Image (cartoon, rainbow over all chains, first blue to last red; front, side, top):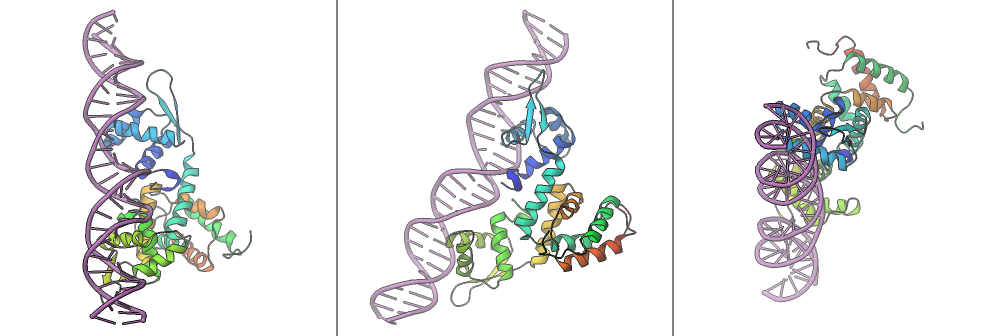
Length: 131
Length: 131
DNA sequence: TATTATTGACGACAACTGTAGTCAAAAAGT
DNA sequence: ACTTTTTGACTACAGTTGTCGTCAATAATA
């Protein structure tokens, strides 16, 4: 399992797209990726089925092609992804991230606002303190 | 390649340890992981050799066991890891990370300081503006 | 309904990963 | 120098992931 939660990179790309465009049929997804990444229709199908087996997608077998719907919210998934990444790849340290932000990472106005509020609120909660 | 830069998760664990304890011999690393993760000596050897082939380690074949040294700084590697993660897994958006911080992620005093300085400095640089 | 196009279930496969045993060569100890 | 350990080069192998082709079943069309 490449990424956290047992989702591989290729699967994540597919799942993310579906989270932004659901319900979606294999063909719709395939058409999308045909332009960018280049995934054959059957590859997309395989990936989508694997995601379904893993519980990230569900499908409605009505008339015509099956329509897939995500079973996890995009925000939730990303949250998990971040948590796992920090834990597994950064050994729990957030410094690299902060450093990344310092070095030119662009933040949207909203993100900056949230960060400001966050910093203000956490002013008195040093690492290790109890909640 | 699980993680960015062609380093797999298992390899990353090994490399990280070596970046914190170098130069290191296979046995030293193996002894360390024998306690925690449970990697057989030869597994560690294999992983270290793969890292060497990928250019992340170099070894000194002097007297006794070979001594391995990292060829990339830990901070640099993590920087790359973060960049790649944000790009590949979050589609370039930092919101999930900010959200992660908001939801209880603990920051050290230093990290918080850096973040504060950062927020202050970026106050007038909305997303999309030129450097 | 005959014909044509679309779908999806399967099967395949090579590359990559995690894991480690074997065994000869080299080093250390006596 | 002889024996015992330790090393490391190789080999192996199963599971995962990325990628699709085939082909029969369905659906859409003429």
